[in-house]
Image (cartoon, helix red, strand yellow):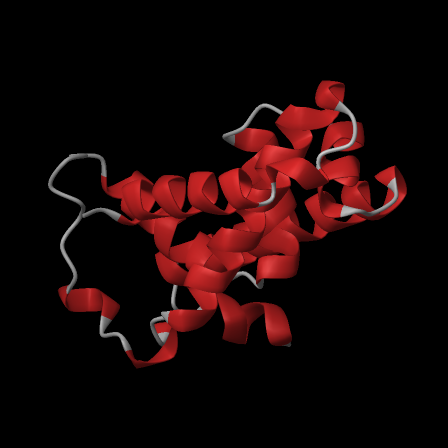
Length: 141
């Protein structure tokens, strides 16, 4: 099974068991997303590849996506800490607003905006480093 299928199945099992804890049916969507987010965190804690040990020069782009830039972004996202990656993925892929993300992650909207800014900044830095291995040395001086 794929990770996505596993996450969905486990999320619905946890949600089913805890359904009686939902106090306001209007908040079911964010409650379910929070459950999914927590299950994702559990899964990610169980399996986290060591990106530092990978020989990225020998990795192929994802065969399902012929665009090598997609693979580069995926690798870069994997190197960003979960604290910053999570709001970025929720905004970019999930289409959620900063206020919605703040509610889901139990943060202030300002904290979400700060994390989004830092995530984009770090993502840009990682991509530039990978595209130009001398980037770090040139910008360090």
